[in-house]
Amino acid sequence: MFGLGTPELIVILGIAFLIFGGKKLPEIGAGLGKAISSFKNGLRDVEEGGKELINDIPGVKEVAEVKQQVDQVKNFGKMENILK
Image 1 (cartoon, rainbow, N blue to C red):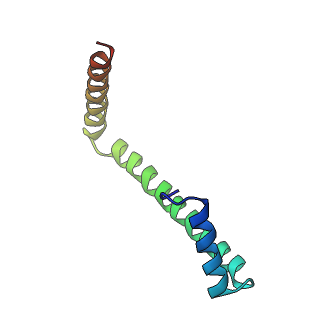
Image 2: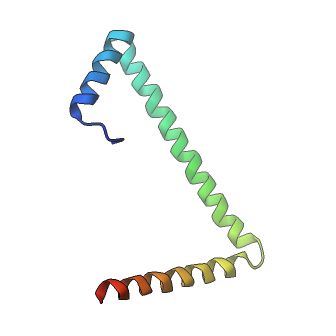
């Protein structure tokens, strides 16, 4: 998790406890959890909107399919080089 180990997280939580106190930490954690959840929902909505956009604009779906095929061929070529 961001290159932080257990000792670093314990130090950060200890400092947060000293700064905010024991009563505020649960409120801060709940607020942070809600913010992360909201952010994930926003990302999901954007991804779904992009998929709808691909289906709505003529020609974009075909281009996306061709790109997918090209990527598959590239990956196949990489696998052949690895197996040699």
